[in-house]
Structure formats: C-alpha cells, structure tokens
Image (cartoon, rainbow, N blue to C red; front, side, top):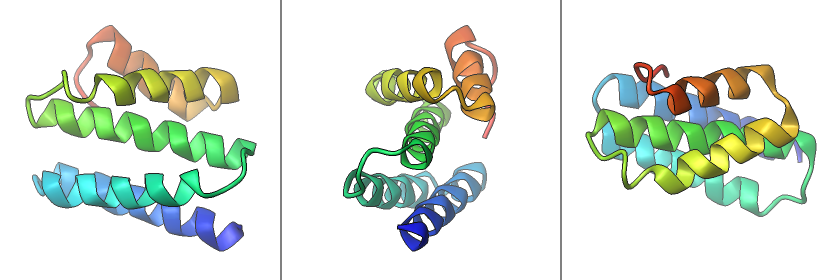
Length: 105
C-alpha cells in the first residue's frame, strides 16, 4: 500500500502545482487519479488524510476557476475527513475554505 500512498501524494502535489500555474484541467485530472487510487485502498488513517487533502484541493481549484458551486461536494467531503482524522494541515485548509478566506494551495 505504501507505493499507492506515494503515488496519490505525488498526484496531489502535481495537481496543486498545475492549479497554481493556471493548468486547472491538468490539476483536476491529477486529483481524479489520486482520488480513484485512494478509493481502491482499505480505510486507514493515512488514506483518509490524503482523501481529505485531495477533496480540499478539488474545492480550491474549482474556486480558482470561479466555480465554487461545483466544488461544494468536495468541500463537504474534505471537511469531514479533516475533522475525523484530526490532521492539523487538512483542518487548517478546511477552516480557511469554510471561512471564505483567499484560497491557499
């Protein structure tokens, strides 16, 4: 499973980089790859932390695209994973997204 986590984390990282560079379609594709991979793994804290980060990244990218409404499902999922895993980074990102502050990738 470790290689799967590393692959998903790399997809997440690439997606964030592409989103910042304005390559939002490539970013969404990378997030989708990470999400698809993580959903094949059994429930576990590391998987859930990564799922939280991926969902929040989806929301942030949709927000950058001016389409926060499409990302609402991802925001809800990301916040849920951030709360249940108690990952401090995911929780901080979720709080920023919820507070309406500027999107941080």
